[in-house]
Length: 321
Image 1 (cartoon, rainbow, N blue to C red):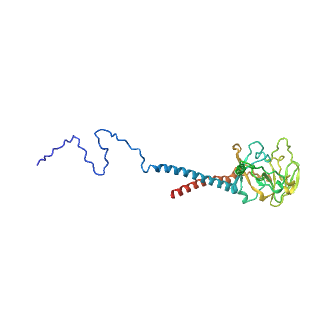
Image 2 (image 1 turned 45 degrees about the horizontal axis):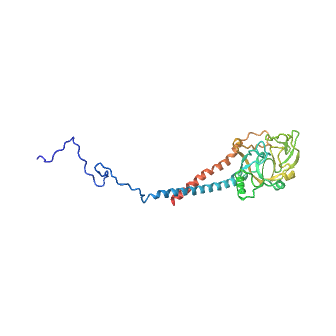
Image 3 (image 1 turned 120 degrees about the vertical axis):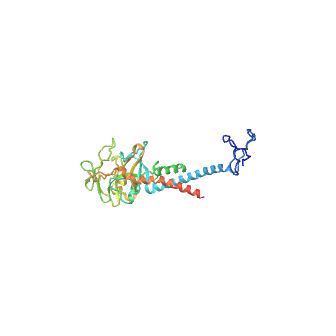
């Protein structure tokens, strides 16, 4: 039976079906007219959270900065006390191996404090040591400002090698060790140890001070002591004259702070510090001096990942809180 419902034209567009409940609907039609109702600009209840988070992040940054600075200070103190420290070269006594003079850019050297925990200093080593009583009895101690603020920064500068340290510390080269007999000189103006001449290629003859060493000895170095001399041979107050010379000029091994490894400042002077044994003339070539600075360099480099780890730990703790 034919239906009374009119058949739609297949080419005529069909009306959209009624929207299903829950489906998205477009904005209600207002006959092509736009609403003129004002839009409210009042902040919703959650808009204040953004400002609060910004303030919290700002506070977290400063707290983190203080903690990182504290970690850096602690690491610096630990490294300087037990691993390595930077020292200022205060005089010309080690020219031209190390530069130091009034009014010039003095060398800063990295001193390894680890090596001599396992072995004793050897001839040829350049070492930093505390002056024994026989070396300092006639010395004028370094002056410190009476202003507590200035004195504090002078102490910090001495700690990181930007100012002379507060106590009397010296840098010289080891020439002979305990039990050896040292004297000067043979017919070729060379220092003798146990009767054998030294091969001292590092010796510097400062202009207008001559190129002939003054005679001394023979002196037998006491046990557990070292005979120290400067490379600037005629401009160095060392074991030959300190304490009146002789055995009183020797330095106890216990007073040695560490071995000078590397010149760290100024940049144009970056280089290792040679430690060839002058008692071993014609010895086989040793490893380059900069190889000796690797352990100290690794210790310093460890500071950076330690800082990063500290920062990550702090970040995780804040998340847990």
